[in-house]
Length: 444
Ligand SMILES: Cc1cc2nc3c(=O)[nH]c(=O)nc-3n(C[C@H](O)[C@H](O)[C@H](O)COP(=O)(O)OP(=O)(O)OC[C@H]3O[C@@H](n4cnc5c(N)ncnc54)[C@H](O)[C@@H]3O)c2cc1C
Image 1 (cartoon, rainbow, N blue to C red):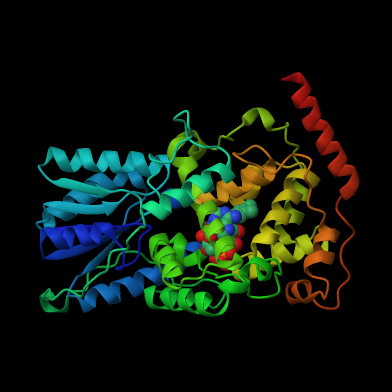
Image 2: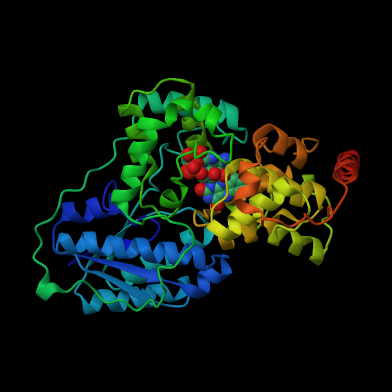
């Protein structure tokens, strides 16, 4: 028996581990480990867990159509996986396990532990590279070092993609006889309960991708800025749990032969995603709460009340509050608001970006460690290619430019209530943030 160990790749299409197992031969059985203790430590909240759960159910059904059972086991954390997996392999006479690599230091350590444990008993773990657009070892500066600035990285990435078009793998239904309708055991008591109306599963993700490319990508460069309009793809929750692979997305974009400004801008956003994964691959310390440039971090202040008001969307700055309430109500936030709310926490409230990173991770359905960490370090000014320290998002200016008709604010702010007094003075706080950073620069 061969096993496919699913993690953040809850799909059949373009799944190298599944493809590898099929090549070696059937029968195949799937396994997934729910690790609540580990997830708690990684800051995942019920929204993302409910979303994973719903997508696992959809995966289970699709696997069953090919006669492949999926067992969902629960252990506390990554450390418990090697023994649990070994004993599961013994129970099901599995001699080879196939999986796809994931970003992150703990994930890397988990896989090394599992490979060693299986190896000792004569079993083998086949681990395929992360399913990215680029080969991260092939993208380097002229001096052979990894890029830390996005624009030259993206130039090189586009060159690379024109020579190495990623070809997503296609899954053909297996004719594996299911043994007595066994669709696998399920030990994880998590409800598929999450806010919003997203439909889980690969078919839905593919449909959304097609609809976006047919109807919206051409105007993306403009429409993506207006948070009240549905001008973006909303694919991030599907990409975050691997229901859709980024190679499938890229291939669909290419097939569509969209070559206007909208398509190019959208590809750039996919490359930002790639850039943050690339950084995490080359700079593992990013996985351990470190900033790329710690010397650019001021001493953060501690203000519990300010933090709580920011979390609840009660800062008295309407645009920030609408963004934070969108997150609480729907488990998603428009990118423009993510940038504004992150900048506000750091540059107006002078609070540590790590607090914001954790809050986002807890509520986001698309919570994705590299993109979230990268986005926060960008906003805080201490990451690779971060926003310059003196660039402050003004909540009122953002509202004037991108929500002049109030549609976005009205959708998320409570009706018939007056806004609270502003929590701080934006101009004064911005000024004092800049002074702190200038002091840091003078000292170093
Ligand atoms: C502080 C902060 C935190 C963030 N946290 C996350 C996160 O946890 N998970 C996440 O997927 N994205 C995160 N982003 C990036 C971005 O906001 C979302 O990817 C985007 O809003 C998702 O909406 P969409 O799918 O409609 O994107 P589209 O605009 O349609 O873009 C297509 C895809 O490109 C990728 N993408 C787009 N913008 C970015 C970006 N700036 N950085 C990295 N990838 C991008 C996403 O995978 C997205 O699905 C964060 C950004 C900031 C500023």
